[in-house]
Image 1 (spheres, rainbow, N blue to C red):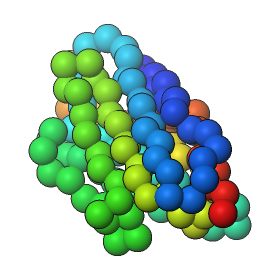
Image 2: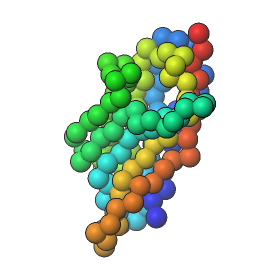
Image 3: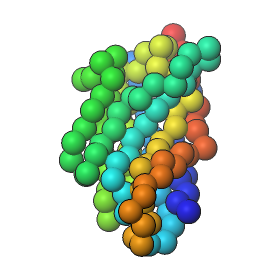
Image 4: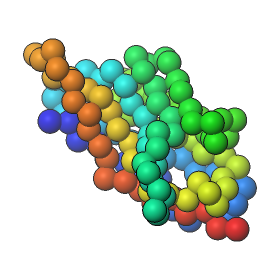
Length: 121
C-alpha cells in the first residue's frame, strides 16, 4: 500500500502564500498521477491541480495564475505553491496519487490525510 503524508497548511492573510507538500511512500510502486483536491465546508471536493505522467498539468480555473503544481519524481513528492491566496481558497487540501504496484496492472487512488488552509481577510 502507498501512504501519503502531507504538510504545509496553516493560517495566512489574504494575498499571502503557502506551499503544500506531499510525499508518497511504499515499496515497489509507480505513480501515474499526483495532485491536489480541496474541500471547503459545505462544498464538493474539487480537483485543484494535477500532474499526470510527470509533465501534464491541469488546474481548476479559479487558481490558474496563482497556484503551481510541481513534483520531485525521484522523491515521489508533489507540491502546491499557492500565491495570492484568497479567502475562498480556504479548505482542507488533500493530495492524491494514482499508483500501481510494480507487479500489478491495476492502479489505485490513494489519499493524504488532508491539511487545513485558512485564508483570512
